Amino acid sequence: MDEKNWELLNNLKVGIVGCGHLGQAIAQVLVEQGLKKENLLISYRGDPLTYQSLKIKGLTPCLTTNQNIFREAGIVLITIKPQDILGLKEDVASSKGLIVSCMAGTSIELLNQILKADVYRMMFSGPDTILSGKGVAAMFPENEYLKLLLCSINLTHIQTMTESDLDIFTAGVCMTAALLQTDDLPGHRKAIIRIGSEYPLFAELFDWAVKVLPSFHKEADKELYIKKMVTKGGVTAAVINSLTSGEPLDTALRKGIARTKEISIETQQSLS
Image (tube, rainbow, N blue to C red; front, side, top):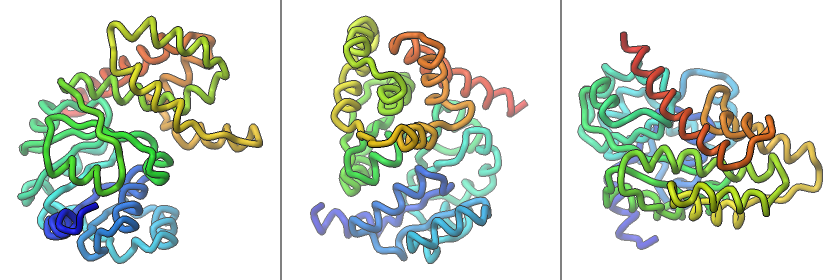
């Protein structure tokens, strides 16, 4: 990326709240691509295994508190589980930067209500695709600084017209795991044609998934790959469970979209 653009990002500072697989992948690639470590701020919940993983990646010098991230970072990516968003209410009060939710199924309206701040949303493909430079991401609303951030880690920006497109995107990027779960590429193509008239974005994401699909010599390695992509109760789990029960890909993707909406309802209910 252009040196002036990196200078801009370094001046902004980038914060990542939550260092699971996604947060660590973004942090690792940002540093590898040129973001200075002193300008990367990250937090985690204290899990010793997470700390060891961050140590191996050389990211422990970037660790700080959530409050410090919101106070100092120009861009803050929230990569925690939706159920944990309430814990950030007090920390966000000191933020002067762009707050970006990377949580599935949690609407801007709901986030604004919870955090009492303006929030952008950005969704990513799986951590492995981010690390390999083959990932995609979508945001709403569009923002030039966030596009710059995606460019800095070699992610392809998938344009979305409405916030509901993010639910489609979230289900669509599960297709790397879905295509490995059931080996029926011709059948999957037919399924995408069936659902494509209603959700054109799936056709673009299907073509992307086919191109980036990894190959494995051992079945156990493939199963481990799928397992890493699945979060219990998450969107990918809904898609994979549907396919495992024998349903076609278009049905599985619809269940993925439905799961994003269920997550939103669950988060809303947790407020009361």
